[in-house]
Length: 149
Image 1 (cartoon, rainbow, N blue to C red):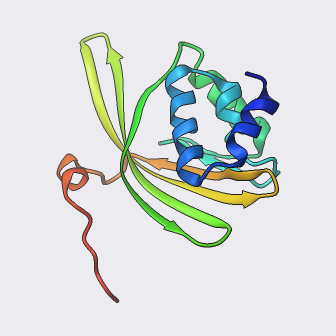
Image 2: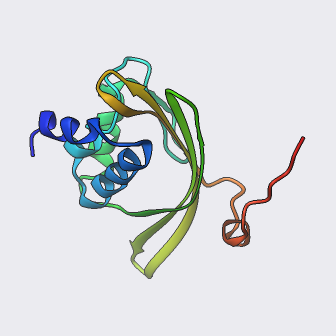
């Protein structure tokens, strides 16, 4: 599928559709499909756990190319909490990341925030921020607490 066709497929979609396409592209190791989820804006931003902030499509693409050079990543989003307004949506997710190490498979839990904007081309990812800090397995398994302030 060409990049134009990929973007056209996302036009009628929702932030959930873009998020699904993003994580499927990560698992497939397909940088073109992954980048089709991002907005065509200079201000897009991506932060991977323990890494510097990446600004713009070129820096984000380069980081994902390096990350996916050995193939796709086994990353599955769970426990999505959504906040949506007319032209923006914020998803807080717990990413289950499974990696193979020399002594066997390991799973990590990563707290991530995905921000989507509705652009003239449809919903697009404008920010992805992932962090391993402070997330415990027990926290990830607990249902969200609703607190009124």
